[in-house]
Image 1 (cartoon, helix red, strand yellow):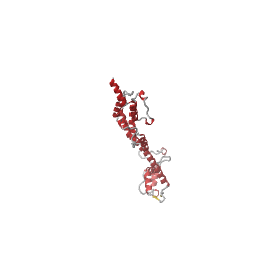
Image 2 (cartoon, one colour; image 1 turned 120 degrees about the horizontal axis):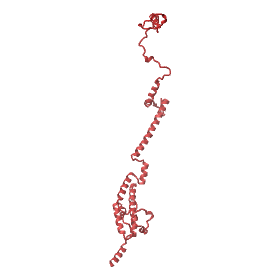
Image 3 (cartoon, one colour; image 1 turned 30 degrees about the horizontal axis):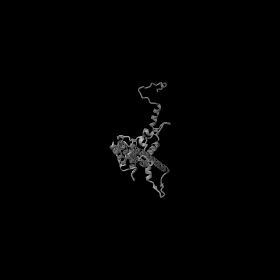
Image 4 (cartoon, helix red, strand yellow; image 1 turned 90 degrees about the horizontal axis):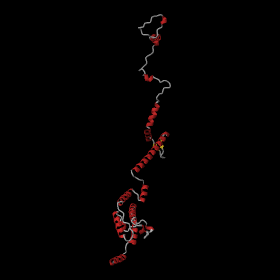
Length: 273
């Protein structure tokens, strides 16, 4: 600003310089008031700048701790590789913090192993792989994957076999017998009747026993369903041979087959008339 009280006329074309600067300029010209030149290069603004109080500043220790956290496992491995083991089996030269980190690492490894084992069990289950105890149980029950496939094929085979004629007595027994033998041959169970099998062979495997039982029960049910209630009243099956196809076959034969002597007498009487 221009002091108009001085009575002077301001020069509008001249650069205004405050009196304080003018006085300092004149004082600077004296050797005793001259400030010596600093040695070296002047400091950059970044070096000399200061943040106002309360302004957030990045702490370098935070970055260092972050780096240490990211490299925890690498540091632990490097640290443990430099340590030695004393005769008692304890690790020497290891700080308490390092031991704690080692325990944490071991716990994490155990957790990963448990998780991996569970995933393996899930994978095995989805891949139709069973545990050993379950395999043994199914083996004893005759329900392994292989035998169940064979049984399914057998059931598919016999479901197309037609039912035999109903046995009512000695009169239609020959016809009934022929149809039962045909059904046994078609189902490939005729060996049970021809070889007089009332039980699986001695020393047969669990799978073979299960397969034999399946075939025997089917043949038994096929014969039993082809016997009338009136014909069933003429015989009794022993309790120790229940569901035996061969025993049922022999009992029916004993009760309804015509004996040779009876047959000859019947034919003689028929020829007379």
